[in-house]
Length: 139
Image (cartoon, rainbow, N blue to C red; front, side, top):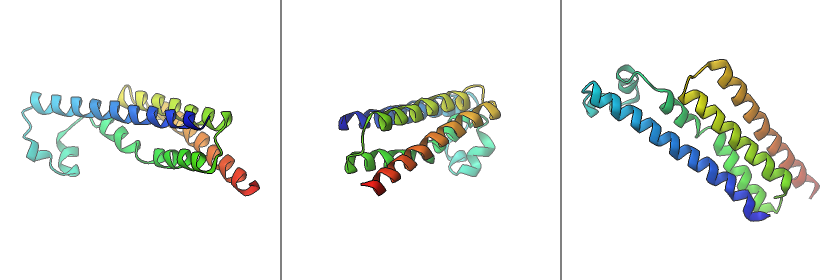
């Protein structure tokens, strides 16, 4: 069961990679179409002013916020021997919600749809941390 905890991490890494490719596809496409010189978007302020579609870039940055705590929770669970079906299921649920969140943000980007999915994912993550903390306390 211990190795099962790493597959959700692989899933999150794959999602992050997919969003990274999307971000560069969109950015390079716009830069070619509009003949934007790379140096003119060297800073985040310049990029925000020149590049009009920031959905994938915004999502890419977002994948380094809550997911950092997700990766740490997986490492803690594995190291402390706390991996079981509930932990793995919560981990995959978080990944699935992040996939939906990314699809919304990189796609039609309706804020309230994105917020509900984000909040659900955050709730799952906090519940995972609570479960791990309780199990650590109880030994």
